[in-house]
Length: 102
Image 1 (cartoon, rainbow, N blue to C red):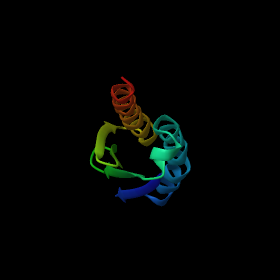
Image 2 (tube, rainbow, N blue to C red; image 1 turned 180 degrees about the horizontal axis):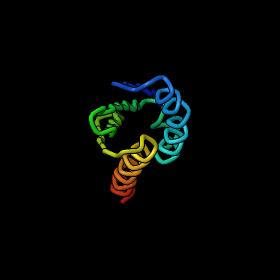
Image 3 (cartoon, rainbow, N blue to C red; image 1 turned 90 degrees about the vertical axis):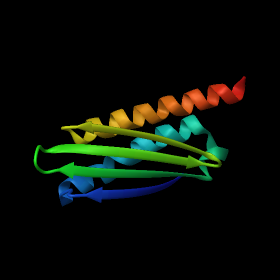
């Protein structure tokens, strides 16, 4: 799976936190998708910090073949926002795989 990360208004320490934490979440998503599908898929992660209220917005877009899945989450913690957006995306992946298996 290819990973594209876009960040806006993040400090260098926050960027390093994201770069250390995000691969763990991507690995879990790859396991759900499967090896053959993961090779041709792209995950675009957009992270934005709002300085006014110290909140973060994380958006994840997974493109695989002719399917595109999207999730986003807002939180005051960057790790929590990544976790919640990743969980929503994982739920969508499970629903799509369940439909294929019937």
